[in-house]
Length: 445
Image 1 (tube, rainbow, N blue to C red):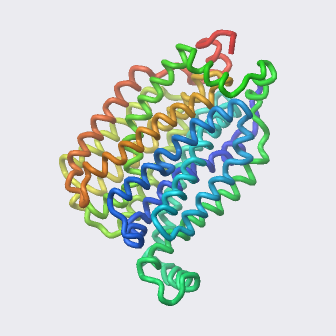
Image 2 (image 1 turned 135 degrees about the vertical axis):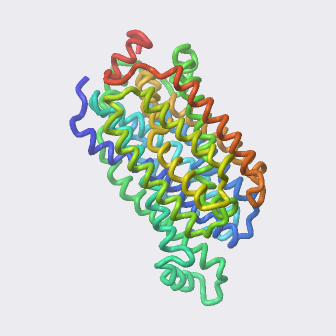
Image 3 (image 1 turned 180 degrees about the horizontal axis):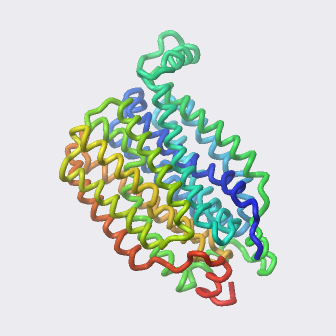
């Protein structure tokens, strides 16, 4: 099947979904302390925000719905409507005045993120040339890095003490009145950060709804019976190869994501409490870390279609484990430990299992239930990450007193991802999706 020679253009448009995914997580994370002070939230409240957000349960619910909808109605169907839901969620957060409203906004945004991710990764692979599929997935991953980097920059500019905070104060008093509390003024900076996500979501929606449907989905739909949504779900669960593949990919992604999801949402907060640095310093460190992730991902994008996937995968997880070994040896009470951890975690992020999960997840399933399988795995991973986020807040404690214990848990999880992934790396590099499908599933798909 001929591939669209303009795959790079469509990849960039679709990759904005990753910007919005990671951006939503980090927008909440960068302003977490500000919302906590404004609404009087406890660590348990913060755990619940993480639990239902784009980081965990919200995305999990959206993914299992969106994946199967994309297989039934097409990838373009998701692109046409999903970001409207995202914008609604962001607006709800922007206008939140209490914890239930904030929680609702995080949930709506998270569901939209989950709906969009399986369709996006599937579309990128299906519209890519054979020798550029890995590159295009990396571009998508770079967008996942640009989102947090930009959001953190905005957060630092608008946060208390930032260069544009005087403008934030003026705007806050304009909308909230002269007697608005200082905590409310500080939280207003986070509202502005979420507004930037609203603007990007609107731009992305206009670009994505104009995309052509995936040629591979169209061909599969034209050649197959018009089955219902539940039929596609049954086909996935009745295929032994598909079930084994789900188990493999979910394992390598889950064990890594249990660590990454905590860092994505709580990292600035951890730097402030366990590391003892200011909110501005914490955000600067996190921003530089995301810049490292983008840079390393760019390097990987040049190698992934030409180099052993096993080598890149192994390198990333070894660096990830080294980052957490810093916690249990040097510690994060000083700037040396904090910076060493931030740099190492940034390097691993550029060659993380998420890249290979996105790539292999779109290669190892037939078009009939490709997005649905990814949605199912995303549901499993983000759902369990939601539970782990609550457990982590208990282990971590109010002031980070349990951070070392948590670090040992993180090392164990990353080791599992390394071992399982090293053993099960599939042979897909440089091969057409049709060939991979035929080899694994025969001619029936």
